[in-house]
Image (cartoon, rainbow, N blue to C red; front, side):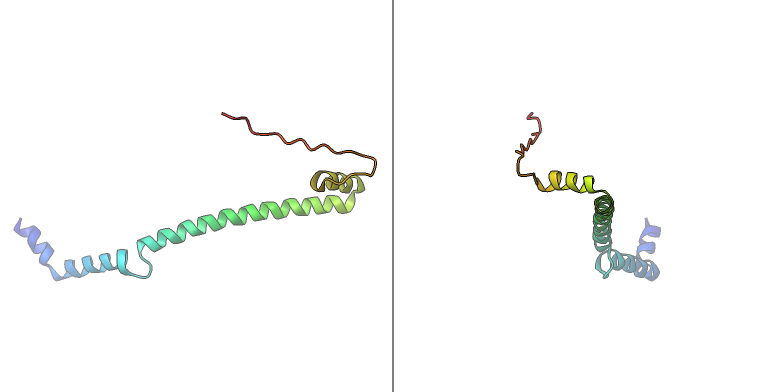
Length: 99
């Protein structure tokens, strides 16, 4: 028991313990801040992946629209509900099944 008390009274142990406590809780880059930074980086990475996927899809659609006139008509009908003068359009929306 005395040996344990001697270790806790040692100035090197006390300074090392104070340093560890300072670095874990009071420093500018403490553990809580590091956790928040990592969660934010993860969230931003997911957003980046989503927008890259959307950008690639839009580029693909733009390329199809520029190369094929039939695709342009199909795109206008599906996305913007455009129609010819002598046509009627019925929009069917499927609802999710209720539990």
